[in-house]
Every structure is written in C-alpha cells, then in structure tokens.
Image 1: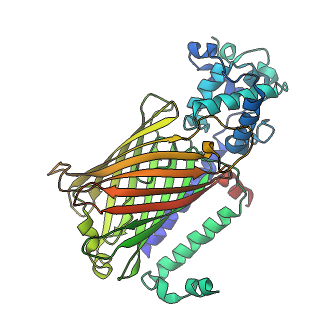
Image 2: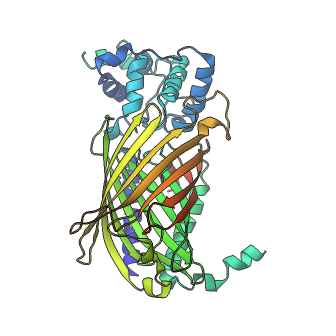
Image 3: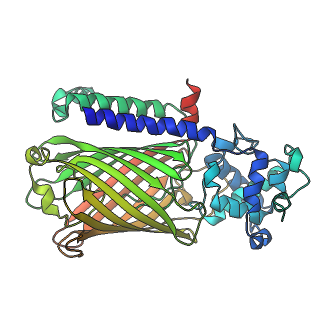
Length: 152
Length: 308
C-alpha cells in the first residue's frame, strides 16, 4: 500500500511539476527571434523546395494543424505564451532559418525539436507559414530580421 | 451484455490486491478523463515497442497507451501480457512515463505484475548527427512480469515457465538505465540503446541492447486530410537481446529477437502498431506478437489547469 501511495504521489508530483514548468516554457514573439537568429549563417541561404506551391501550402496547413496549432493557435497568432508566427520578425526570417529552428527547437523555452517528422514535411509547414504573411504584431522588432535582432 | 458481465466478474481481479484495484481504477478514471479532451495532435515518436529514439513527448502532451504481447512458451503455457502506459512531456527535454503491467498465462492464471516509472532526459539542447538521451527507470515488479520491454543479462524463455503462483510471490525492485543514441537521416530513424539494469537486492548489473530503424512510407504530406494514406504508415524493425552480466559480459547464454514493425499514425492523435517478433536462438521465445494503440492528448497540462 505504501509503495502505491509513493508511486501515486510521484506521478501526480510529476504532473504538478509539469503544470508549473509549462507556465514558463513559451517565450513571447520577440523572444522567438533570438533563438531563430542562432541559426548558422549557411542556413540563411537554404531554399524551400516547395516555396509558393499551392499543394505544399495546403499540406503545410494540414501539418500545422496536426503539430503546431495546439500551442500556436489555429490562426498561428500564438496562444498563451506561444509565439505569434505571423509577427513581422518571424515572417522576415529566411526559410532556411525557420527550417533550422523547426528542426532544433528551443528546448529550454519549451519549443520541441521537430526533427522526428521528415524534412519534406517541415518544408511544407514553412511554405504554409510564409504564405500567411505578417500581421505587424511584433512592432519592436519589425524592422529587423532575426539575425539583425541578434546583432549579426 | 456478456461483455459487461465479464467486466464485473470479480474472479477476474482476484489476483490483484484491493488497494491496487483502487489505484488501477483511479488511473483508468484519469485515462478516461484524458480521452474526454478532444485532440488533433499527432505524435512524432517512432513506432518501436522495445527500442527508444531521441524523440520525446511534446511538452504538456499526455499519451495514453495500451499494449500487449503474446508469446509462445516452451515448458509452460503461452501467455499474453498487457500493459498500460501514461506518458507525459514535462518539458521539451524531459518525458516521464508510468506503466502498469499484467499477464495471463494460458492454463494458469491472470496476475497483476507491477508498476514502473521511467524518465528520459535530453542532455543536449540541439539536434546533432547522433542524439543522446539518458533514461532512468524504477521497476517494482514480480518475477511473473512477461511484458519483455527489455531483455537483459541472461534472460531466457525458461524464466517465464515458472507458474504464476510462485513467480508472482517474488517481488523485485530494479533500477534500469539506458543510453539512447538516435539519428534521423532522410526520413529514416536509427536508434541504438545500451541497457544497464541493477536489481536493488544485491545482484550484479545486467546488460542488454536494443536497435531500431523506421521510416514513413511517404515523406511528403498530401494536401488533403486522410487516414489510410501512405504518409500515415510507418514501417520499421527492431532487434534486441541480452549482453550478460558484469561478471559474464557475453551475448551467448541469453536471448535475442528480431521484430518487424508496422504502425498507423492517424492525424487525430491515435496510433495503432503491430510487431511480430522472432527468437534468434534456443534461449528465446520462438514467436512473439506485440500490438497496441496509443492516443495523444495535446495540451493536456494546459487543459488540466484550466479545470481549476
């Protein structure tokens, strides 16, 4: 009985810790630019093989709803502390920077790496994100690309 | 109607202590509550039953999993060992998981065989060519446990031939550690696990391994929503076995298996998997069949908080 109580306590302690941890995981829109800006310089030149393709954008939207909308919202404007992906700073990031960021995530801030889904699907998601365009929700950094925001 | 009577027949639970029954009931309630949350979250985890990759649960997501294994048994009755898992992404670099194990041996009995609590940590914050994950698990099981979630030491099929009445009396507390190394390359995942398990009752360290590889049938997604399309199917294979003990490190005298895997990951968060396994030597069960399903609840932590 004592072991069961200990196991139950550990399980619920984990859930409670998780609830607390989740509150501090997601950065705001501006906070997203710094990790994107850590993308190596070579990634900025990467081209999205699906750029502008309507089928890829539709597939990207489907994937976005499966993997991303839970945190970033159906409209990609962010939910809670998850970043607004229509913000000017994010939209000004190059496809290569976004591809690097999507693959690596930002583990300390709660963004998981999405290396587990094939590269082709990550590019499709980026094609969809780029199709959304900026809504200007990132005024403080609207003039800067992620690399400029990081002083590079 | 008949199914309902089966469910409420007390004799089916006779092997489970009253306190454990209450605990199991609580967990089932939690799982049922979880299923009440609508979800559209699809997991990016690999379909392995034994091996682990470096992909952890997304933070705040809860995955409810039920799996079973059927195994042939020389010198005893064949068995089915079902287990349930609750997997939660505590952070993006830490996943915790709780297991409840049981088994039915044909011609013998059905018994509850214990619980396990596992934690996986990603020490490196970015993707690399090879990505390490550290795994620590505490097991509170009996010798009747037949889930075969790992093979270590000199494990062989004759360990499972002991009658449940005797095997279930012997409780073991074990610490299991794993070094998980995993890579993604052109849609493929390659995972290598090195296992070290220590019975906390003054027994030597035992070692084992698990290898896995998998790939979706189609790498690109199609524009339209679909369930039975190639992009949702993943095929793979895993191989696992023992490597002896710290006193006798060897791959002989223990059991080894190879098992192809097929999984269907639906966009609504449900995953169905099946894996026939084949013993590679006389110490191994000749045939194993694993199957199961899981359901991912996106944003479970946030939804739970919103209730209070």
